[in-house]
Length: 311
Image 1 (cartoon, rainbow, N blue to C red):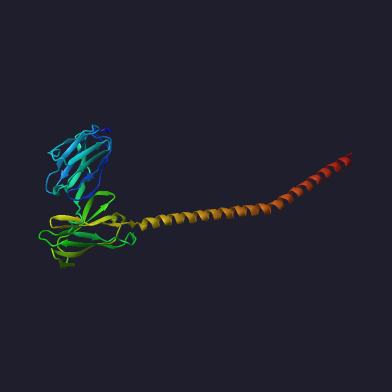
Image 2 (tube, rainbow, N blue to C red):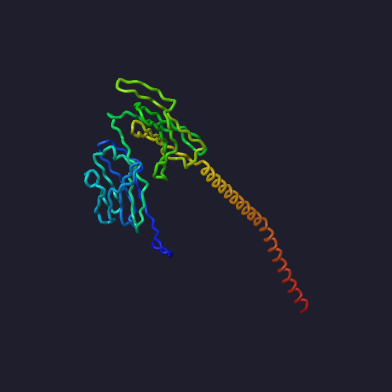
């Protein structure tokens, strides 16, 4: 839409799944849905940490054809399906360097708008799993002002290198999960145990949240970086009810009901008094009518009698 100032303003959306899990060697579809208006080109970018985003492919909107860039068409592993309102990326035979972040973008009048991105995480198969991250659900119903402690249990292989635990939240209002806390070192609450093949450790990490508000609602994930990989927990969902707003609404409704009852009772009392007054005034009015009739008869009789005397 062209404004009076000569600039373009347009509304569009780009929706991506924030997190996807896949096993090494498997296939994955990374979806991207977008609005159908004010779009010239749709694009996919691959972003590895510490590197510049790399253009995978693009498509002129509505053409149905896809143009691959940077050698992605030579691998025979990246495929894109272009539809009027979607631009889905499929990767087959996943390799280690495929587990990065992928951005869907649209361009219009030389302006590129990016989606929130999809983080593709490595999901180990049961036979290869050496690190397990478990999160306990929250059973109690939470309200504004409450406190809660989330727990994350980690069983991992002991190896040299970085060991870090992340907590991040994914809420419906924000597609990009945000890191809210980081444990830089191994917890003091870790117990080492030796097995026949290797040594492992069992650790428990906690995240305490106080004075909860509805904005704190969402799914909280615990992630562990160890042995060169990141392992994600199953997530703990927090649903927080806003009692303050609910109580305010209840109070307003109750007040309106009370005021309505007072008005109705007042009207009934007034109507009842009017009926009583009319009932009391009715005999008096009837007596006055009778007296008026008698007076009229007396006047008529007096006139007739006077006329007879004059004769």
